[in-house]
Image (spheres, rainbow, N blue to C red):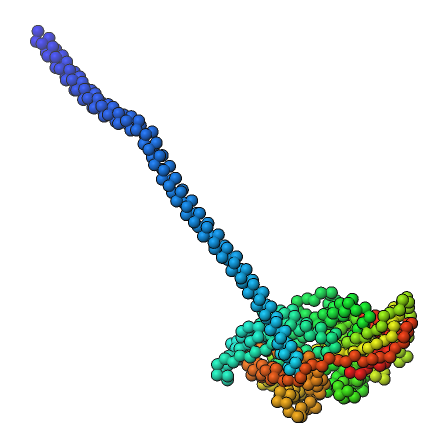
Length: 577
């Protein structure tokens, strides 16, 4: 019995522990269920809130959309109103700008007309007073201007400051302590360093028309060495050896080739307007070297011992000429430049510390135009004949394919080598007038201390400076109306006497450097131009036509000229100047 009681007690205890365990688990389950129930109640409440919120969203979206649309419409209306106002203001501004542009254009046109009118009146006044036209060209700064050489025996470039400034088309200023500040010079035209070759020639071109109107013209480049005189007159130095045969000018061409091209263009226009008027053109190239006249076209002859240095003679009419100077007939710009380039290859030049191609002589290119008027031509057909060559010709090599035929008695060229010529028939030869265009590239004045020349180059420099001083003395005497003008102090002034003090239209192109190291020569050059403007020579005289005898009717023997017409009477009877 005791054992059964123990088993029952053990089973009761076990059952009690099982029940207690089940009770704990039941309590935990009940607690979990209560917690779950609470969470479920919370979710149910959240769901209700969310459902209510979702139900309110469409209404809120509608309200917000209505508010946005209302605000957008108001803002759009505001923008439209502002845009219209700005558009109207812009239209007003555009209209005002157009009105201002039109007004500016009117004033600009008026200014240009007044400028041209003032220029025309000034040129008329200059012609009536006989004043010399003076243009000034400021060369650009070159790389050599920024170099400084401190080696013994080498030239020093000195200060790198630019002291010469372009103010406007008629004014140039110089800043230097010698002049106590800034001094201005006024000329007919002032070219800025950026102005091209074409701009320089455009102000020279009107003078060429005067040639065909019966006036002599002289264009002279003056300035210190290295200031761009030869570049202005001829172009780049590299083009001296080879002349490019082109119909139109290139950008670096100087005054001489452009003047030749313009001259033949004017002649062609004149021939179209007046078929009974003919023009023949001749060119000569000379240099004044060490105060001696030297014919650059005579170099290369078999016998030129008596023509190396030539004499200047005074003609019966008072003009000055070099009768033994060779003249070459030309028919186009290439013929002219072939002669000029031939002369340039024999012109004296040398390298100095300032300029690697310093001209050591004054170059004078003379273009002579003979204008001949005829009666109405007959209705006969042109005849073709072969010219007979000079029985004693001597050939002068010029450039490939170009030669000069020289008359041994007068040493002047009248005919090209023998060739077939088409000669029209003319009536009686009425009148002929001869005009002369002188294109002068003066040698530059230089300071011996800066150029570093010695020996023969020093002698050349002295002759150059003396001739330029003589030229300044002549201008001073003319400006002061002295009774005696020292033309004979130099071959340069003697050869240019007809242009400086005669009846030629003279244009002086001043070439100056903008750098301070050249200030002495630049101020002297600008002063030279100012003195030249003060000269009053009286009104320029037009060349009077000379009556030349001829045959009446029928055809006669004739010579070819640049226009293909004037007969041989010209070469025999029109050698006077």
